[in-house]
Length: 270
Image (tube, rainbow, N blue to C red; front, side, top):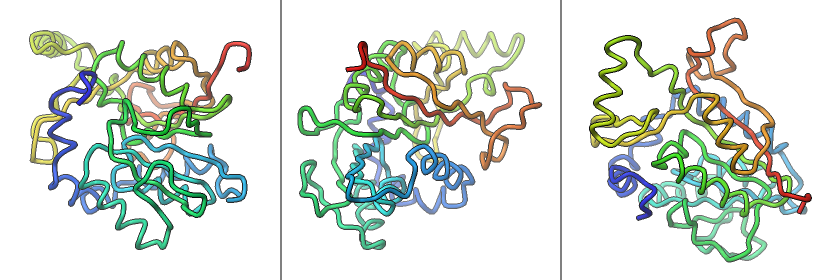
């Protein structure tokens, strides 16, 4: 387990219960329909399979975006540390008759690959680059420490081709902050637990275990991406139901998370 992941994440990525109930628990979540539309727009789906557009899904879970991309002409590679999540992803791909492999370097007839490993250092062939990368449903928020998140995103940029696109979802820290004395008390409690601003421990996540999650302010996330070598394409605040964009007249602090698309920037265009 990478030291950049909080210890609670290790329990999460080994939980059979959370994996087996994942699709049922989140099945009616509006975000899981809207974020597919966001991904499809920025990947320009469907695509011609002959061009071999490659997508890397980090923290792929039960494979919902792997299946989406594979069904729409992409070669999709999903990486996850939870073996039970990958078993559910296999079931998803089989149910949809999508040819897949559990090998990272499978042949051209395969439309999807499922790889077990730490998304911070995915066990993929050296030098393999992708046209796009996904980090959905706050996967980036599982990475502990601002420096670790910056280092990770800079390394991920080198996994992408020049002009490659990164699509991600994060939670909104401004929505979670409390004003006045209660807010200062929260900060003090966090500092006592070794947490940075924006860090949260979700107690008994889904009734099973505590889980670390970092939430982002718009300024923090924008700066992080720029410093790591990306340029923003779209920064979309979500409405309350997470089934569309926030009303432009609404308070930005009320956004129920963000969907973001950014492109790689390499010095000299390399």
